[in-house]
Image 1 (cartoon, rainbow, N blue to C red):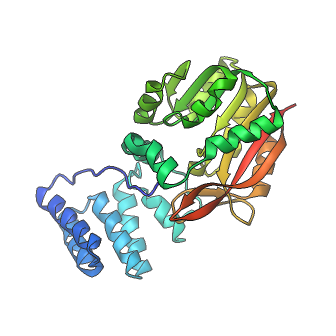
Image 2: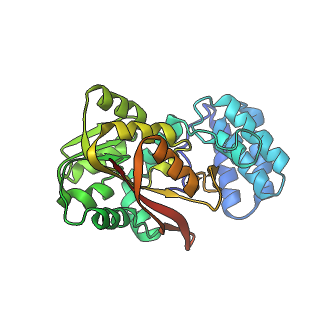
Image 3: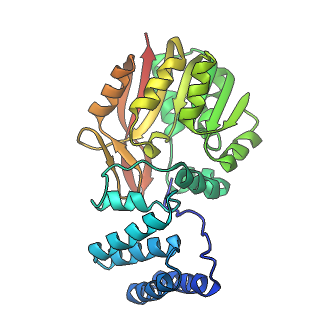
Length: 309
């Protein structure tokens, strides 16, 4: 996930909304200069129209005018504090702000809420997504034949990872920020407990309740989290002794974290090792893989299994 923008929010001005829609139609036909001109008229009519400012940024960037694109994304950020359209991410990608800005909960939630209905097909068929299968194979390689009393599926989405691991698990808990994704997961009937919540907030509550899990899985989740250190540390605190933490990340050749053109994060291998080590977790497996494809090109990823000694 994903190449989809958040759901459209009206400017409150019918004429501005119509111009915005016409601009997108022109862009779809390949007439970017005309689309940009119409969007300029649109934001002049509705200066707080975040969707139009973001679309104008996109048009200007595609036309090669990076300075004007940055200006438009900046206006979108200013009128949209919750960053519903991800303007801060575009500014970071273009080098005009924090290079690795955090995604807002609003941005992530709306992105997945609208994607839920076609999520499974889009990932598994169109993008060749195989994260759950790769994680299951990695866990089997570390603990072949083992069963797990309690598993936590972080960012469970529609339940793809839950389905892959369900035969090994006695009690399966899933948590996700998107209510629409949780509804899809619930329909599969494989979870003992499903919670719609921010991952960090959920883990804090589980820590306070002294909850313990024998296996924690995060499939294609950390591509939406830049700083993994706090979340890995929290996961370590809900792991029972001898339990496993299995997850995937997209990766890059360097260290640290970078924001990709897809507006997902990639984590370097040294960064992943350091985050696990800081949390007191030992790396059991760290394998290079292609968890999905992007426009037919395999996406460099890591499949990781760590253990709590």
